[in-house]
View: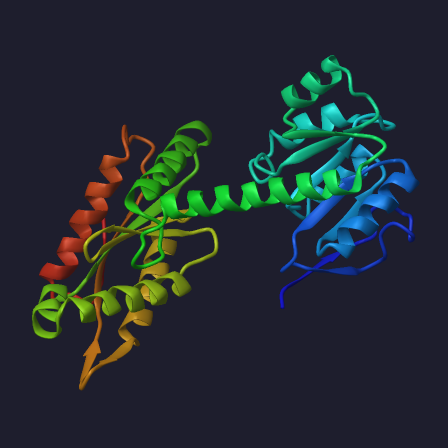
Length: 318
């Protein structure tokens, strides 16, 4: 069972215990409410119905909390000391990690102007006080399910179905992002092009089912060899690409060699046969004079084909 650990961010032991552990198999609802009666009611009701909860009594404390943890839903009071609910919601929507976290406003105000302002501030729903138990539960359940469904669809849209790596389209999006960052801030990145050696022979000898297993096992080994900040995707067929942010060519060479060795250690038993794997890799570092992402792709691809020409199962730099 995965767990969440949070610190006491409110200073109120009745509302959040020191070093409290949250079960991450349950949705986490953050309640931002300065009225202790209301927050206790929400917390008790949600916990009884299978949710984990955290309570913050003001906007500043909530910002501290979400700086460390990402809730599945935020119940947000509008009228609070310091940062009000509208302002806090707008701040959340500027955070890439939190912009899709649903915010339900809580307020005794139910006039049209207040409700419209809530939606314009990024809220997805509006619950008026005093709370109706079933309404609070129904709206909480609905918006968490909608968020989960959206996340699953987004994940499917960027993932290669066979290998579980990111697909070509998403990889190119991230490559564009690093290219733009390089141009704006003079950063660096490197790229690896990877090809499974003799893959056609494996398919012809053992069949496409074996070929699929080879692609999956190679993908697993490569993903484990990279840093958490790196992105590896299936570029097409048996060809893969890895994006290494903040890595110069020396670091890229080290990472590529580690990746090559890891794949070489993979042994696949298929029916009565044992299939061994090797890969050829080409690496290239970004260049501030590049005018488009195609340039680093071509350099990496050319280096990869050089590895194949020189006998395969090796790393070449460009």
